[in-house]
Length: 537
View 1 (cartoon, one colour):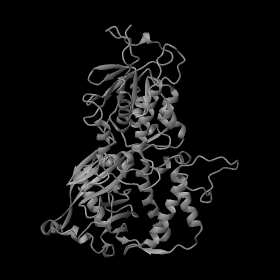
View 2: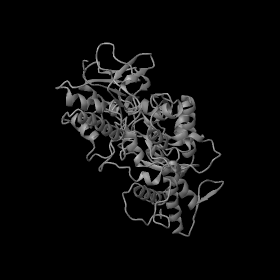
View 3: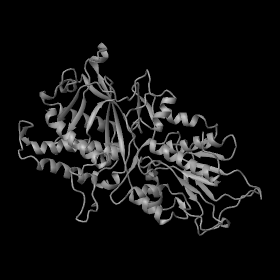
View 4: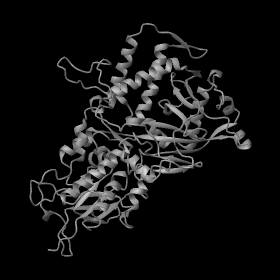
């Protein structure tokens, strides 16, 4: 029986898949140890990283931030390939424009009321992520000293209640001519604005579904958080550039993964017809084709796994073991979408005048019966992607993010315009040098083109990124990373048939591009160690 080189097939050409392929190819290419292949169901590489051009600017449809530059492998790659600076405009998040917080009805909020709530919220979030050690914010332990089951949302609200409990007075704050809101109600609405921003960080539609104790294990690299001037896709292109032509096959969507568990033997799998030893894993594609492999690195999203395992139950044959299914079930996977809007100004177009800028608008919603549509009410901000840009950005999470995917461009433009008109309807809202409500009403400034992401309904992703849902723990992320079969109880069963990578398989860096990268390197190293091959590059 002739033995072929081990065939490694990587499913998915996103950050995790390309990191694994880059590592394997560069580590073992000189020895020609492996037969390597990437199969990607889409028509492009990058996965949840997708840099596009919009109205002359470079924007990120997916991953946006380098979360901490000190020790980040993404930052190191960006430095090495000179991607951190560009002469062309991009979604740089470098705002020198006016920042303003406006409540529904047109009340411009002074920082004397916004900043204390902002400081409180940041302190609570830092505590929730283990950045502070003092336990005085809130008691999260029972009479036996054990941690209670608690959601991030309830923790944050308990923190706000404790803040109010330390203060007696509730001042009245005038909102409009018809009514007024007391200070507590207004602070609650401001707190909700920060909660809505936090929803986009976690991808959870409701912070009450995020497990407080598990969230404390989440980690970021220290240092500044920045964007990539030449686009996040430049990182993807760099990783793929070392791979030979033909190694990445696009448009190959996997429909079923056939593997061996500990109860099977190789006789149960399809044997090769060319005199070579059979391979234990068989991938079936939607076009009817198939390929056998010794090892598969699976990098699909947790959303795809949830659908393929919990709903269709046909992605794996035989089915995944219960311990893997339970981890997939317990972890959360949410939807976050970005909305980009072109801001048109007749005056600026005619006179090439950029003196009128759209402010960095923080939005506080108080009423429930105004013309503002429901899908805008949990949007925290609308702002230029950099100072003086005519491209505005807003973030959506949960049901609002899914709704955004179904709306027409006209419905989006009408909804955003109604919201802005409401917020800027009071003369107190107008800031020197920024766009005013009158300019929008008179047609001097209006929204033009629309671009939005659609991660929730895209069958290749079915969401954006993972989070620690109530009832889950860091152990579930570790379980996600466990290869199959878990243990070689049967000597006739090949080890490391299916390896799992992707952001949802990293215990402390889930939901991030660098978490996906690190997981790909982890699984590449696992295979290199299995074959006693040096993993040094």
